[in-house]
Image 1 (spheres, rainbow, N blue to C red):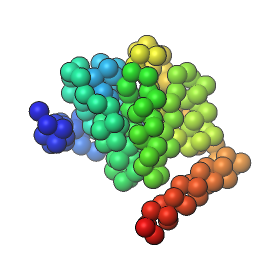
Image 2: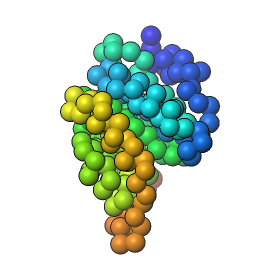
Image 3: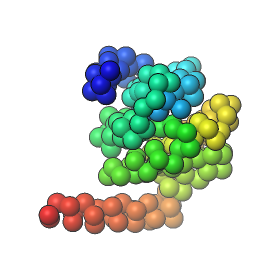
Image 4: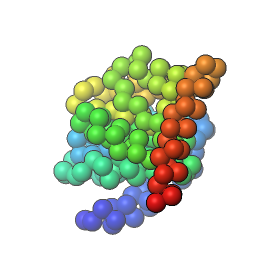
Amino acid sequence: MSLEAEVRRLVTRIVDERAGEKGGLIALASDHGGFELKMKIIEHLKLAGHGVFDCGCSSTTSVDYPEYAHMAARKVASGECSEAIIIDGAGIGSAMVANKLPGVRAALCYNLAMAKNSREHNHANVLSLGAGMVGAALALQIVDTWLDTPWGEGRHARRVAQISEIESRYLRVEKSR
């Protein structure tokens, strides 16, 4: 099945059409290596009252992670989803892809301290997980910590604004070409 056909099929398979009782819609995506963990996280989020948009993939059949990470990050960049969780084997490649999109601040987190810091200090809106690096139980704890940690603002706001300003410099250069 082509990627475009799978995307069309998945759009009809939105887990929850709109956000659940907990707030904004969360996009999830994985490659084949993260598929099983993604499905556990979706179930966990649904039980906790979150609205979820599944961007694929749909099985453990080998796929390329960049397209799926891009789909989820695009949902955040466009404002369709408030956050995204992306999963591949190590989480590194998916984070790199997501951070190419303007307005996305993707953080790779392997432990609870990283999850808390990425939200509180860096206002991360995309969480990247490595299915081969963290077990399911720890991954669910990371997800909960990440979602439950508020943005710290204060002195951190200045630094996040600097990140956005640096990003905008390159957007201006692209527009002038």
